Image 1 (cartoon, rainbow, N blue to C red):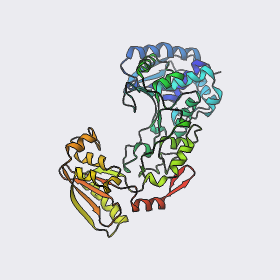
Image 2: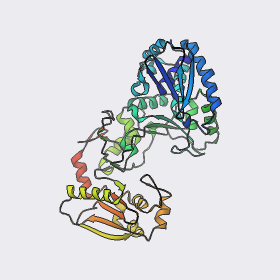
Image 3: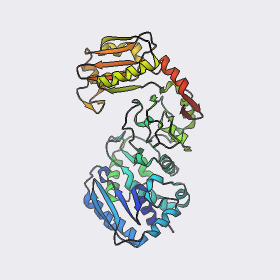
Image 4: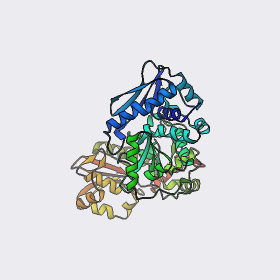
Amino acid sequence: MINHEKAYILGLLVGNGTIANNTFIIKLPFNKWGMDPHKMSEIARDILTKISNMFNKSYNFPINYEIGNNEWIIKPIDNADIKLLKEDLKNLGLPAEGFLLKTADLSTAKKILTGINVENFLSGIFDTRCSLAKSHRRFTDEAPIVSLEIPGSTENFKFVNALCSWLADLGTITDQILYNHPNQHSAADPNYKGWKKGFKIRFLVSSFLAKNSFVLKAKAVDVSKLNKIQEKNEQVPCSKRKIRKPSPVCIHSEINSSTLPVSVRNKLFFHYHHYCAVLGCKYAPINEIKSIVAKYNEYIFALPRMEKGNIEDITEVFSKISKKYLKGKKVISRDISVVNAINASTMKEYLELEQAIAFLFSKKLNGKRHSGAKELILSENSKELFKQYELEGTHLSPILMVNEKNDRAVFISAIQSKLNQELIKKHIQVNGLEVNIV
């Protein structure tokens, strides 16, 4: 029978446990612990007393820990017999081999667990997967965030969606959910290789604490401190949420990746709630998503929305697109100042214009991103010139922008260009809420 202590242990295993060769490890990532990630003694005390006592009492074996790579690794000792633990996992419909998050399905656990067992099971997941780092969206003193983070390598969209829905059942309001999909992590650049940044379910601290808790003291103390300084209110519940006009997305080169489950593979998504709706979450604001999908041609870049890099590489992008779709069109070039480019009426159709120019003239780069405030970069370089290439006689031509002084170039296109709209009609098919690439 599952009691509250077993429920917590099983939550830890689901959150970051791996079972192999009749043993297991559980990882606690202390680098995402909280405001002070070096609370070594508190963490060690909790593992050696609170968690160890739970294992001894529930499964009759002790555990110990080791530290490495910014992680606390919990392991059983003395050749522990973990058969009962594995049986309990199976009774909850959970995997009992491998990295559990990879294949975990919460549907059976949700039916069986009740009351305090639910709270403890989820606390096990929170202790292993929640981050209190200040790098999260909206994390200011007024709006601190608890981010529940699932690695993209799990490819487990169903688990993430089900966990968020379960928390909503319990009264927790999600601030934002991010899925491990190119439209979320690379909406502008169709060839960005670093899009696999994982899943994140984010909550404002007060909303999280209203219904949930951490068992480990180090996290519990930190989140309580954050709760005292929060001033912003949480959003309305997801089902009642209004969605502002979303930013358009590009067709990423890996949109058909085998690492994406069929439910989201080769499909475009315009908002995080769009994924929720397609995945069947009952809390998704369906009518809002329907109204967005109905105007799908306003939100898709069939041509690259923006690509940044050195002059040779981006000139090749411009050349390939010109030859493939606009063969025979003459390439024209001109020198143009930053201020004139920004103020030109036709250039306002190019969504990424200012971001592109900021990349061309930023003194430093963070990867392929400009470093510093965009407005300041544009202001300081308002009279600087760059070369602009386009195709003569083409409606809202694709544009190549070049700064020869620092070997930087950017390709941008306009969503309402005749060519882009023709490609949307040719390659996009809508079926209900699904926007499929054909």
